[in-house]
Amino acid sequence: MRTAIKRFSDVWQSSAMPGHFPKIAVAIPTYNRVGYVQLCADALNKSIDSNDVWIFDDHSTTYAVDDLTKWFHTENVQQNAERQKADKQGRHILEWFITTDYDWLVTLDSDLIVRPDWLELLRGMLPRTQGVMSLYHSGNSNHPTLTCGNSLCEMQSLGNAGIVWSKVLA
Image (cartoon, rainbow, N blue to C red; front, side, top):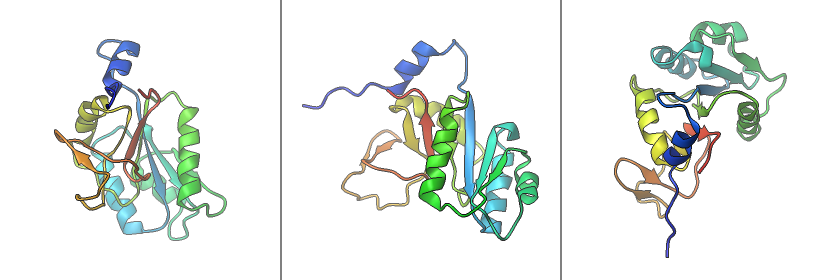
């Protein structure tokens, strides 16, 4: 018998002030791939305050920190002194998030392009989960661990690309 899943919205609403939106950080791990990074920046700049955009560059060799600052309209750029690769970079971003005053973390790979209304969709969908979800799925829709319902799918595992975390997990 499956137990009822506690929804994140129950936890969030009990801990948040009425009418208060969660504070959302967008973290973007980057490494080279100039064209994708610029497309990601262009899309993101149209939808979220640049003060909440954080770039974590993995020691790119094809552009500089100044380029990232210009493309993403933010001073929030950290560059590794040496290449770390994706797993270490993902862990670094999560460790950073835990120390901040942000409520939600959206990790967008630099080759993900957001649609103009992505933030409104996120605010509507994340509360229907247990506090973690992915905005991206590149797998086969017939994957044995993928279960879909009303506009949301559940899967047993997910990666860092397009993942959304809440500090409050149900």
